[in-house]
Image 1 (spheres, one colour):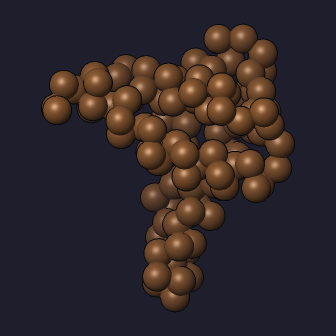
Image 2: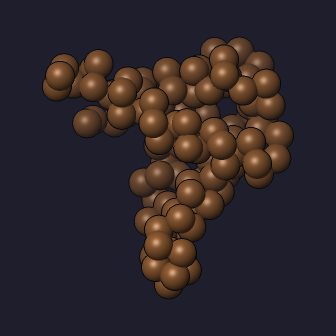
Length: 114
């Protein structure tokens, strides 16, 4: 998936998260776009480093620590963008689980691989 398509998919996914969670706030739609861009950048650059550093702990927990890494990446993306906020780690943890479920579903709509 290209850069623009992944940004659109992340933007729609973040909009769905905004609808589902009361502890996730966006000032306007531009904040969703900026946060989606930050999420694409963090997923491309910082997440692989975090996954590599946390590999022993991820192996010890049979992969469950990857949920913690996903929550940290989501919190970092929200902190990098202005106009958006996420209230606490527990919200980021649950939102990252929901995001990992809805993101591929929305991506399928754009790639038309049914």
